[in-house]
Image (cartoon, rainbow, N blue to C red; front, side, top):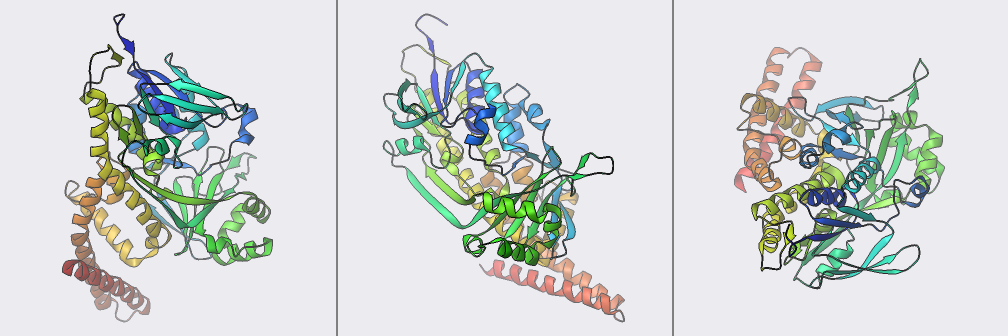
Length: 492
């Protein structure tokens, strides 16, 4: 570096998982990185109680692991040391909790349950270990002058006003982003925010004590457990301490009907009786009335950048509902793709005073290339809520998934399940969505043909057996429904 050159400086607002990972990537490029976080340092024991608990476990899959590995610091291996692989869904059907396993992939693919707080702490620590990264806590962004590259921040404890400067400002500050609010003053930013009528409440299933006196999982830890109840659902993800983090998702109207302990127990006895035995009534009552009822918000924004001065990533640009397990994975992919564009446009880590529009071109390319993918995954995340709380129990859905899995085994390059493309590949979300629609009609037709053939065979082979007749009738019903859907698609 000559005396005329100086390292580029970047201010990252938000030290959540996406902000911390972005800091690592840019530090690896030689940039001077300063991260500003509103919350106190979550790694300090005295601050744990001050930070609002957001314990919905994160589902780490291929996109997120690829981005972690891309740092060259083996962060994927670090995070997975405490990750728990889940190879499929375990459905708890009916009030008795009849168990039905549905694998995520035909080759044993897994998503991984990771603790949000520990992952965030590990990434902040990894960033701070780099000599050109500084992380400051308790500082909330009040406003930003993007043309001048100045930030005005307020210390949340002392109320002191702090000024900062950076060549590039990156907003990784979540769905209610202050950086995005500043960005709106500089570009014609299309923005949408939508709350769905459903909320969530965190609960838990404690570890049980085994015969040897040691804690054990109360349920199979290799599955994401789902209690699908059509209009609402409950899920549970395993933790390293043998407990499960449980999340109840349902319309706020249903939450508002539960006024006291009796209402709560009656509700669970009606819909989640098997879960009561696992949780214990006392713990259920304590956690339900203590823990907040959170909202679920979707945020859409475009463009994501302003010249070579600012860009927003993660939830600041595309907050989505959590039902595809892609929020964090998508945010990590934002980081990886932005980094690849910095390389593609040969953005230097230093500035020498000469005119250089490479950074502006890279940020512009990010908006142009990423927008359709972010739109696609936000739509898929909302769609997957319907599938998880209702579709997974439908005969039509189950038949289609069987056919899709068989065809994927037979002709893997021709038929790829949507979940596989989204969770177990780095294929662009928009491409996965488009391919899913192209495959959909023929899979539905194949499912109808298979169902009709199987049902007819059962009728012929088992005409004297009432049970077989009942099974055949069910298959015929599913097949006819599938065929009807195929015909509807054909005429559209």
